[in-house]
Length: 112
Length: 114
Image 1 (cartoon, helix red, strand yellow):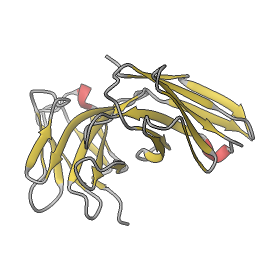
Image 2 (cartoon, chains in turn yellow, green):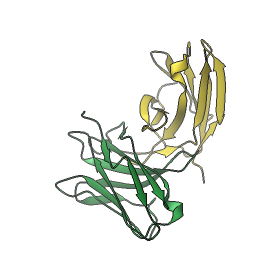
Image 3 (cartoon, chains in turn green, purple):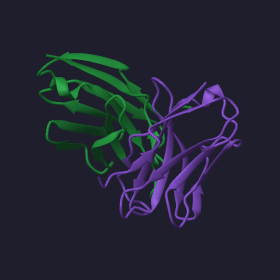
Image 4 (tube, one colour):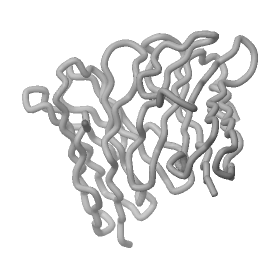
């Protein structure tokens, strides 16, 4: 059973566009929601994370929007660049130091 | 490089052999997590360890898989009698303490079974 559902599976945008990746969860005990970026042959690297007490968090060109009532959160990449082409994973965890539940990933391609 | 170090980066084994994957956490981190990633899929949790203790192994297959994190040295994920279905990328992550987010990931070990 997939605890975190992620969409779309793949996404192609033009340079400068704003790709949006969405995730949904069911377990209201989740209290930490990170986004990871992964390039081929590398491990996931943390991009940005949010806790459910805020509705939005921005770090550089990356923004997380969080809707607690809908149990959804999304990643927006402003002014996307070809170097942003990668696979993006959302995740969720509950409690202190526990495992992450990952979405199935979104392959993003930014066309120059 | 003070990041999470995994070795080997690539490992090839024949069916029935043993695979040993090693993970050295970031300096100062005492919590280690192992995840498995199949092609075109997200990461699936396998096991969470602290030094000399297994905290949560709910994602670990009951047979052939084991993990340890000794007082000295790296964490080891051991797969005995490997089968083709074990082919995957295995990632290790570490965090500094109980409840210490985020988890920092290594670059993984790509295991191929012939």
